[in-house]
Image (cartoon, rainbow, N blue to C red; front, top):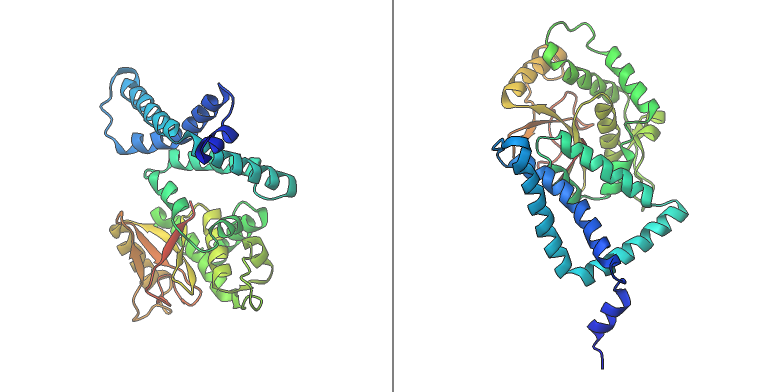
Length: 306
C-alpha cells in the first residue's frame, strides 16, 4: 500500500530526464546571482585566465545542485504551482512570464553594477507593506515623470556656482523644493489603501504620505539619484543617499548656508546612517528643508529603489 508521500511523489514527478533538466535550469537561475555576490565579496587572487572564478562558479553550481536534488519533490510541486500562477497572470493581465523575465533581468543587471549586490536580494526579501505595488508605482521611466524632473532642476538653484561634485544632489534638492511648494495632502478613500503611481500624482500634486514618498522617489531616481522609502508603521517617507560622512558635512553646509538658509536657520539637519556607514537624508513632506525633523524616529523597514 503506497504511502501519501509516495503518492505525492508519483503525481508530481516528471518523466526522466525532465526532472533533471528542470532542477538544472533552476540551479542556473540561482547560481548566477549567488556567484555575483561571491565574486564581489571574496578577494580575487588574480589567477591566470580567471581560473579561480571559474572554479568558484563550478563549486556554487555543484553545491546548489546537491541541495536542489535533496528537495526535488518539494521544489517540483512549488514550480508547478508557480507556473499555474504565471499562466493565470499572463492570460489575465497580471504578473506573468514576461514580468518574471524583466524582473530577473533587472535584478542581475543591478547586482552586477552594485558594489553590494547582496543588498538587492535582501531588499526584495525583507517585509515592507505593499512592496510590489510601491515598486511598480515608482514609474521613473515614464516620460512625463522624467520630463518634470528635468524641468524642476531648472526652477531652483540655477544660480548656485561651484560645488560641481554635488551637482546631482543639488538638482535632487531642487526637485524636493518644487514638490514641497506644490504638494497638497489628501487622504486615501475611506477604508482603502490607494497606491498612486508617480505619473498619477504628477497631475494634481496631491495624495497622502505614501503617494508623496513614491512621487519624490520616482523624480529623484529619474535624474540618477538613489532614493529609499522608510516605513515607520503608520507613515512612509522618502530619503535620498548622500554618501559618506565627509559628503554629509559638505551637504550640511550647502543646506544651511547656501540652498535653504532661511528654512533651516537655527535648526538641525536630520539623517540616518545605514549599516555600511552611508548617510541618508530625510525628505518627508512635512520638512521645509532636506533633513527636516522626522515625524517618527521608528524604522520598521527601508525599501531602497536603485
